[in-house]
Length: 108
Image (tube, rainbow, N blue to C red; front, top):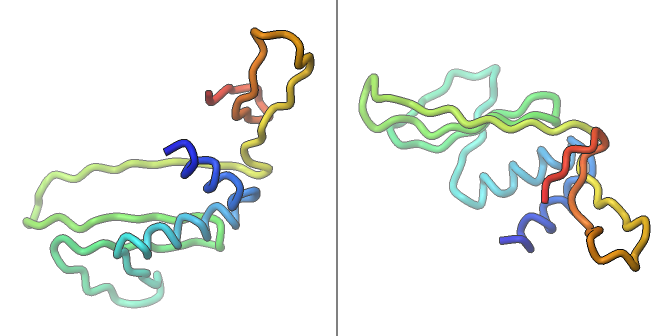
């Protein structure tokens, strides 16, 4: 699973590439693209996604029953994106490499 994350991050160095990578993953999992300018024919259990400005992706799976409960899961990324923090003093065992956002939030 960690290799999948590293591969995703390597392909997603800016928000536009992250959106493209997510679209490819969704399509590989059977999701269909919907155009916001068109009428949508949603079928129960159907998998769909829309994009906005090439930098945002919204995906959903239609419920199988009318008025069935739904869940919304969201994620957000900004450019310049995630980076690997270099070691400042490689000889100190307590320091480690980890995914780090520019605002210092560690994601290890």
